[in-house]
Length: 132
Image (cartoon, rainbow, N blue to C red; front, side, top):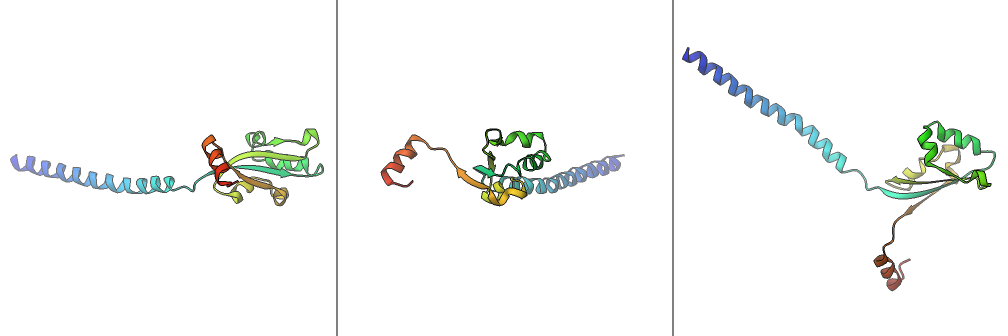
């Protein structure tokens, strides 16, 4: 009876050790994925300006709408006042990624400008060093 108890305790100990090893192996990919997630490229704010002609207008809006109603609503349209230009602020890693959000038909006419905030201290430094 004592031998059976010792064998059972030994088996349980081996199961606990094996379980902890397997658990650590299971967290390694998760840790790597978390690290990769943290290593995303830095995002910047871009102002997109996408001019189009009156003839292209409805097609451009239809193309944007194909991505969903929220995508259509994210753009601001000057078309109703005769300025056939779409505007949008986006977070993107670079200018090309921002421009990729513009429908392909009019992308070559679009511009993406990296924009940032200005603090009073930065403005003062700009005046002193004439960096603008």
